[in-house]
Length: 606
Image (cartoon, rainbow, N blue to C red):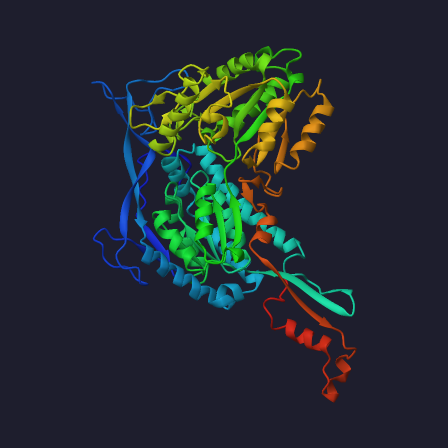
């Protein structure tokens, strides 16, 4: 069995383009030969990794360490090897579906749904659980390949890529465990508390769900909607993200081995080309969308009957970190003692975990004006100690069990770098400064996407970064004079409402101020964090949002609810019992006993 080093060393991956329609995996030939199931010829486009090969910018070849693609020199946010140049690397090919090919894929989903009478929706919940458990077993065989692709395509460091895969498996397992332990799904007994009516209430599928996942957590976030939808009996069309999509090509065989034909279909290529025709057909019953609100709005409007479209949306956020005045009463002491040691750790993690490319990241820090400059300086010093490099690079030690992987890694493409530069330039033009050394610098030449984080201060309302979600390694610090005049209006009148973090002193805290903020924010945000960063976990907790941040709730339980509809069976006791059968009068209770033996819907979960 290969060890972990086989994942992170050696040559880059190369994933051949494949399609998965009607339960059949087909590799797309480069000679444009026609594929089965009505797909015809499928075009391929090359996929470039955000992580690139390293070459030298001078006459001396760049030194390499034991990791073939890594520079030998450790890079931090204040130093780099300027002789290094990163060059683009092709790591795979991705099929580019046309409108007609997307509609053919939809037809396969329609056939599998069959108006609710298809194989998958008519299976018992226990049978579907067994199929998904088989899928888990098959998917785990691809673990190392998926981790490597996550590193090379979207720049996730080894530990984070490993955690994404493992957390995805754990989420599925927790979901199955919840179903088995709850009477909410496939109850074990009828409800006789409403005599003379007896009820059996369970949940059933909605129909065909179109699932669009994000690039930043292409496996975990996507599967947090896809798997609950499948377990509830829905047919799923998965739109592979344009960036971060190669991991989904690695899952096709696992689906093919585990599920009936047509239960899951994958479509890749331009979303603007492939998705609108599906919505316009009116045959999509539910939309699970994680991404931008404008794209979600376009898709919803394309549906001819949007009133019957079941929606689950996880969208943008501009999560605030609010630092209360009581924190500063005894000074900051360099951010290393008392409350500050924890708070600075949470701030760094909240703003820069995975380069700030998380919807739950802290994206604007409100600090009392009289202390904001000191806060910015101390935070900048801590940012300068972060290791900057490729996802598989080790820092501080060559022993993988002890070393830390790069904390700041490449962004997925040059367009993200350009957007970061725009926001930084706009802020500087309007009076902000980059506080940390080399903040905003690009390491590795003009084709590199490896960006040193930028701490910006002071950030004011006239700057784009004040309102726009940066989704990248920029930490904007906004000084405030008053919670009532500056901070609360930003929350109250803003476009988004996902989460907020309130940082206060555990020793000198003004409990009344914190309590009032909780009360005010309870009708604005889906989650209020005290002295901790924003985040989705734990998976058992509801993950929600308001306004343009979310519609629907994600958790082990809530996702099952989102992708199902209650179905109730009822009867009234007519007083007749089994002993009346010899007279030809069976009795409804006796009838139900016989029905239960043959119904998959009434079958309890084993």
